Amino acid sequence: MSADESKPFDPFELTAAVLLGIGAIGASLAGYQEGLWGGASVEAYGEAAAMTTKASSTYNDELTTYLQDTQIDVRAKELIWEGTENKEDAAGERQLGMASWMLLSQLSDPAYKYLKLPDDVRTEYMENQDGDVVLDEAALLVALETDLDQDYVDEVFSGSGEEFAAADKRFAEGRDANGKGDQFSFVGVILTVALFFAGLSLVFKTQMRWGFLGLGTVVLIGGLAFMSTLTWA
View (cartoon, rainbow, N blue to C red):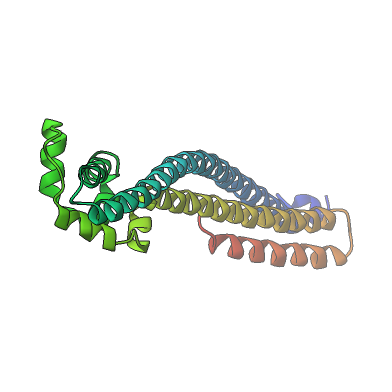
């Protein structure tokens, strides 16, 4: 019996087998992490799409409110201007009364606030729906001289703005998860290359096999080191 045959195992083959096993386990873990991050990415993209759709619906509602407010504001200003010019006549009183009704009942809350109209009058009007509750001439003149500015626009569209921001954030999270999954996919490629060199080393019977095994070991260590720096799901 030769010396080689008396050995319980071949050190080279044992080293290659250990390297192959570690590489296979590492590649499996990398594939598992890639799948987890891929699932998180798909989920985030789906949620971001749903959130964007909801934000678009909110925006459309806000746009309708904005257009209605601006139309009412313009028409009320016309009535106030005409009414103050003819306030001694019955027609002027009717015009001021119509302007008061439009501002009290038709404006949105933000528009009413930014036209600097009195809250107590509107509260009384909304609670009682009393036609005798009207804005006085001083309040109407304030509305005439006040424009719906950018602060009003920001408040009207604040709901959809926040929803779009949340959707963008969720989409960014999905993109980040996708990038992390790609990193684990790259690790899988590296470890597969290591397995290739380790398996190729078993083919040779000369000292060259140690060169291939050493190259596979270096690639394996590099792949595992890189994988240890990644964020795990």
